[in-house]
Image (tube, rainbow, N blue to C red):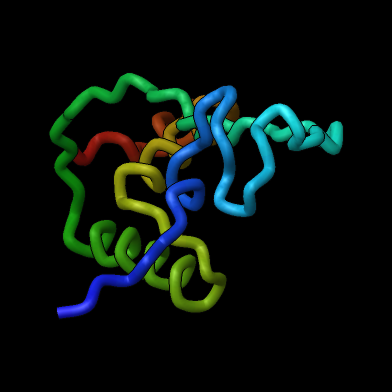
Length: 112
């Protein structure tokens, strides 16, 4: 079996005072002044603490949640979990406390 002859300096940097495969001394190699940028580290999004809770909803509400999720994914190209949708809905509803109070006064919150 024949082995390929690969020059040593292809994979290994030459030792100071040594000679490259082309015969030039290491000291004779000139720096072109170009800066070599280090690869930027991949920044991970900050982890948000999440709590696991149980929420009991009516079957029709569960179907609505699934419909919202699938519509968002297949018609608009945005993938979201059920938890993300519920989290968003709660944050939006908490910003409109008057609407929540009106729903409570209308008896819409007495289901459960």
